[in-house]
Amino acid sequence: MKIMDIIRRVSPARPGADGEKIPWDDPEFSRRMLANHLSQDHDWASRRADLIGRQADWIAANLGPGSSRILDLACGPGLYTHLLAERGHQCVGVDFSPASVAYARTRAEAEGLPARYVLSDIRLYRDEDQYDCVMFVFGEFNAFAREEAAGLLAAAAQRLKPGGLFILEGHTFKAVKEAGLAPASWWSCEAEAGILSPRPHLCLQENFWDEAAAVAVTRYYIIDPGRAEVREFRSALTGYALKDYERLFARAGFSRPRALDAAQWPAGDPFIGQMTTLTAVRL
Image 1 (cartoon, one colour):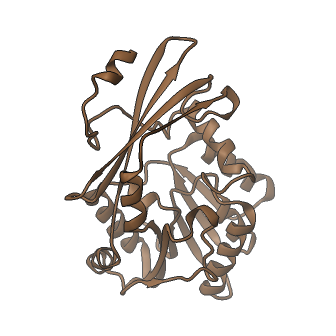
Image 2 (spheres, rainbow, N blue to C red):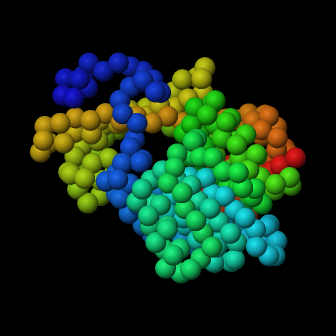
Image 3 (tube, rainbow, N blue to C red):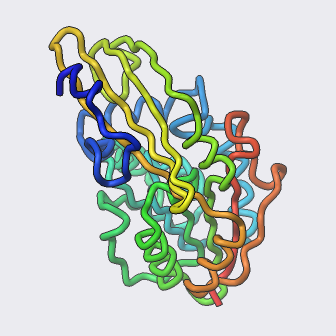
């Protein structure tokens, strides 16, 4: 792309139609993303260790004594599964970030923990095993289109034993709408700090809110001055009110979801009031 392509862009941006998807599964991108997952300076890519530890404590306490089988969808570098495997639980993590999965595998093997990691798109992952707990946390659920999200919930229910625990952490409807209505912005980024580019660049960001579809779309233009290049990326989040989550849970075969409070599941400062964590059991 060229600068003129930005000027002539089509607005509003549409999910699935404009620009490249953020390349979560690209090896180089995934290495840069892994560094952000592991950073203890912020809670954006993954939460810091103390918060994850408190959440893992809640999971372990609610699974009861003994070894449980746990499936972590979109597990990233295995920060939750590692802690749960240290407690003796049998864990499987699924993610399509090569660097994150490699990191999780290496760490588990080095410590001899009962954790296995699969490099796969969670929409395509097939598993005949039955689990005591399936978890899908940190808002990844909202990044999928409605039909895909419903399919993921149905697949999660199929993998759970009757009475098994399901944990879903999603964005609130208010947070998704606010993201879509946020004003356009820009920032500069040095090479070592970039996620969407390994070189110094400018990022122009604009946001759009589709009221009818309840979808927020964010469009990023990455301007590389050294190469005189422009790349466009986009992401989308689907908003769900609590009644929508309840309807999805019921359709998938779960009990009515129960929301966890901040003491049970601390969200971290950037996400207070922005995330909701729901638990249910398979009926």
